[in-house]
Image: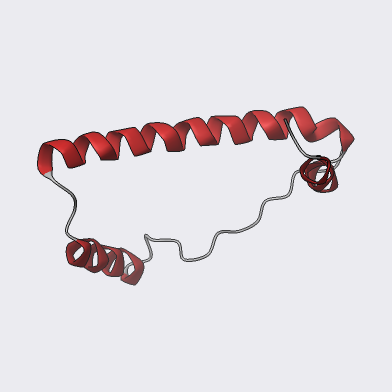
Length: 80
């Protein structure tokens, strides 16, 4: 169940007519994140957890060549 405050925040972002599409997109995004978490857990079981220093080094390399977003643009759907 959505709280009144959450529903109001959604309406302020997308307008009254965009709520359903916003919730659909949010649910799909959460399912993708859940599946990714499951995949990572399976990899950890098979290969052990990733080395934090190696992960940090790879993140730094990706950031250096512009392939790791450090800030994400806010996309605001038009209010309907």
